[in-house]
Length: 504
Image 1 (cartoon, rainbow, N blue to C red):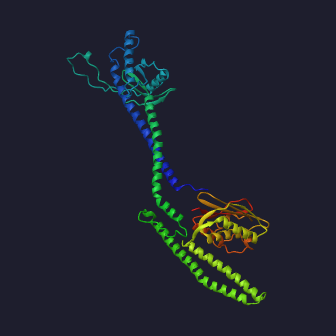
Image 2 (tube, helix red, strand yellow):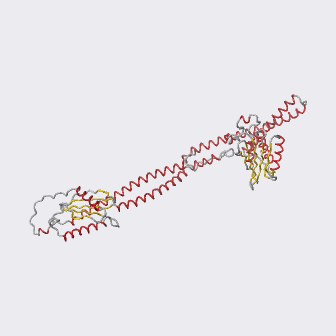
Image 3 (cartoon, rainbow, N blue to C red):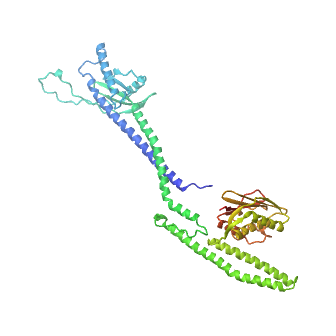
């Protein structure tokens, strides 16, 4: 299972944290703005309740009711209708705000009530209910009788008694939400309901702004966190890049510390020290194998020459000749191992010298084909290549690659099996594929089959000669030619190797 990206998790966690903060801030701001608007509406509503006082008839006038004429009732209603209409445009909006008004006298007789709204009956019921709960006005203070005055008493108005501050509540009908305030004066009672549709409309606009701006802000936060985390993880990517380049030819890689954040300095120092130790150890091992091959080459050559000369001096068919022949075979086998080790040490050091000439791969394949027919006549050989497949390379080393591939195709083949040789070229590359019948190679061995001294399943290789250096050396020679040698995926019961060489 692929693990999630650490950089992606940083970006998502940052966006989640910022989102929680912005949502919380937006919710608190929305409620603060809403409460501020309601408080402002309450202040305006209180102001208008207090301004309604001059509209009341003075207490010395006769009470309203049957004593009023129809003309006076009409005049009173017109005055309150005008007051209600003025309220519709008095609450800080550019449009007409629905307002309901109920006015009672001191005896709870209805002087005026709104009847222009579809929901006036329900709103008026709420207003009357609120008037019942409104506190009574304070009683007038008893003061000593005033001194005689020369002015006309009938022209003097009694002192104004301010009512107790009203309490404002929010009530909801079937179609709207209302803010209601009610108060009682000594000579009348008044209740006003203001629709909150303008406030709700403003809050809806603010909510939509939040709904649009918060996702945009989260996207910016996520992108910013992605970029910032990318910069913070740059030393790790640099370290990863160097690790990917660490091969036997790239142990001299080092990560510079001068531009690295202080948090990664110790990690990079430890990694650079590890590379230094690996480079020193590999150099010593490579030098040892090369030096050992050089040192053993001379005595093995001398030993081989002495055995060949002695073998010519003994009696043919004798037991001594047989033993000397066995010893000569082992010396030749050991010499071959030394040559392979020497070539591998040169390849590891990047010093494998190539004598580049034009090589006819078709001719080399025909020579290998003749060897196969002579060494394994029981195998069926199929060919699919044309003449004139030329490449530029080291002829002897290319022959060594093909010899190793054909040798394996013969050694690991099945009884009465077959070998197929295919070759084709593109404008830039030559592909040579050798397929043979064999036991299946486990998938676990596919990545290790080119390792040195690795021979896979012992049960598969028990009767097969070799020490596991051939494929490793063949691939190193191919890579020295700027090509490659790969194990192909095939059907069950088959093994296929493909040699790739550049045309130029």
